[in-house]
Image (cartoon, rainbow over all chains, first blue to last red):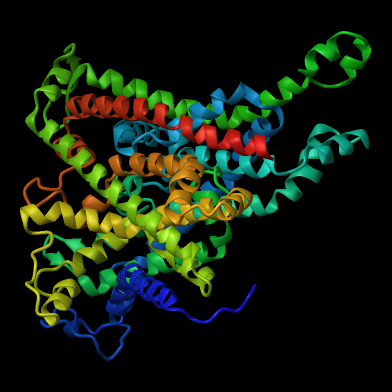
Length: 285
Length: 312
C-alpha cells in the first residue's frame, strides 16, 4: 500500500463518517447518560447536558421494580432455548448440508416459517399454553401462561429456522474429503459427526449461539403476551415503566441500558460474522 | 443415492450397516422438523378453526358456533382494516426505500475509507443489536415535545420545535426515522460485505479501458451487487411489514390511529377486545399475503446460496 497524503476528498469522507456516527450512536449515548441523571435533571427545559452522575435510577429499577428477577428470567429462558436450538439445528443443518435432504424444498419451507408474523399466530400459542398449563405435565414442565417454559418453547421454535440456515452455511465450508477419509479410517457416521465435523464447526456453533441468544434476549411480542409477573422478561420489564400514571424516564433508561448494553458487547464480539448471521448465512462478511 | 448401491451386491454387508445414508439423513432432521411442523401447522389449523366461528371471550359466548365466512366478510368490509393495511404499506415502502438508498451510499462511503474502516463498521452494528422495544421507549423520551433532546437541539439551533409523536402528520415520519436509525446500518453492512467480495479483475480491465466511474458503477458494480441488494431488500421488507415492538413502545398506534399498523390493529382487536374470531380472520389474511410475498421473494435468497455453492 502506498502512503498518500490526506486529501480534500478524504476530509469530506471523514466529515460524513463523523456525522453518521453521531446520528447512529447518539440515541445509545443519550440512553446511558439519562440513566445516570438525577431525577430532577431528567424533565428539564432546556435539556441539561451536564449533571452530577448518580445511581438512583438503577437502585429504583432493581429494588422497587424487581429488575433482578426479570434478568434472571430472561437469562434462563434465553440460555435453555439457545442450547436446544443449537442441538436441534446442528443435526438438521448437517443433514441438509451433507445429504441435501429434501433437495432444498424442506429448507425453503423451514425458512418461510421463520418469516411468519408472530402476531398472526400468537392467539393459538396463547390458547395452547393456557390449555397445557392447566394439565399436570404442563405444570411440571413450567409450560403454562406466565411460565418460563412457554417462552423457551416459543424462542426455540422461532430461532430454529434461522439457526438451521446459518449452521448449514458453516457446515458447507467444511471440506467433504475430511469426512470421507475419516470414514475410510473406520469411523462410523456418528463418530464422523461428533469427532470430525462438530469440532471444525465450533466457530459456527458459537456464532449461531450468540445470535440466538441476542434474538431471545431482545424478543418482546411473545414475552409481552405470554407472561405477566412470575416469568416477565427484561424487555417487558422496560416497557413496564410506562405506567397508568405516566412514564418513569429515569428508571426506564437505567433498565433499557441494562437490557441493551450486554447485547451490544455480544454484537461487537460477533462483528466478523455479523453480516453472515444477518443474512441467514447467505452473504459472507 | 447410496441406498441403491447398498441393496444390490452383498446383502450381508448391507445388514451390517445399521441403516442407509438416506435414513440416517432423515433421522437427523426429524427432531427439528417435528418441532417446526407442529408449531407451524397446529397454530395455523387452530387459527383457521377460530376464524370460522363466533368467538368473544369477553361475553358468555366464549368459543361459539360456526358462522361460515362472516368474520372474513367483516374484516374485508372493515374500514380500520384497510386503513391499517395502507399505513403498513406506506411505512414499509418509505422506510425500506430510504434505508436502501442511505445504506448503499454508506456502504460505498465506508468502502472508500483508508483509516478506521474496521472501527466504523463495528460501531454501526450497535443500533441493530439493541432491543427495539427498549430503545423505542428511549426514543419516545428523546421525541418528548417539552423535555426531549431532539427539540432541545432544534431550539438551540434556533429552529422551530416539533411535536414529533403527538402531531398526526408527523407521527408516522417519526416512526420511520426510528426505523431508519435502527436498520440503515443493516443495509450498509451487508452491501459493504457484498462490495468487498467483488472480484478484482473486471474492474482492473475497465480501468485499463478508461471507463468512467459512472459507467463502471452502472455496468459492473451494480449488476454484480444485484443478488445482495435483492436479498437485503427482501429481508428488510419482510421485517418492515411485521413491525410491532416499535409501534407499541413509541406510539401505541397513536395519536388517534395515525401510526396503527396492521400488526398493532391485530393486537388491539384480538388481545384488547378479545374478538379472537375476527382477529384470526385478519391474521390469516395477513399471513397469506406475507407468505405469498416471502415465497416469491425468498427465491432470491436461495439463488444467492446456490451461486455461492457453485463458486466454492
